[in-house]
Length: 111
Length: 114
Image 1 (cartoon, rainbow over the protein chains, first blue to last red):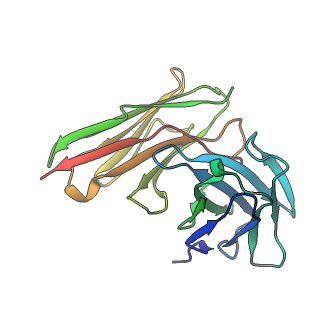
Image 2: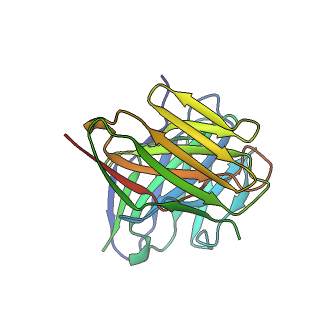
């Protein structure tokens, strides 16, 4: 069964550094999402992406965040200047319609 | 605004007992309600979902009920087993569309004691 994949599984970075989190959605899916989950809390929506543009973003997704689909398979989330409070698990998800399938996540630790 | 409330935050049951988790949502236009199971350190896994044109859906030991008038939906797990222990999240898509973002509840940590 096809799955969403994400790399790296764990990223440690210093405050102020840029990070890029990578995702490979399921191949026939059209809608792509990033969510984050701070340890012990609920999953929060960041951004959705369709037809090569952002379709919706949350208040969390400020100017420090950007997304890109640089080729036909990858979907990336960039954080330009990381803050301590960006430490969380970041999940990519994709869907062809309603059902959303999540990747295994990247644990981002900002020190 | 868009909101999903979930209760209880923790639930402990004996193996073989039933477990019920309840959620309420704020957007009356919502029409898709999935449930996800998340084991420690793993991805959320879709276990069952329900659309607003039905009131109940079953899949083996799990079932979901929906009351659109009251804007609440529930997950029922029967004959619980230790491997059911996990965090369960309900979610809803705000608005009438089906491809939008998911709004998650706060999660319920289910512990099934052998």
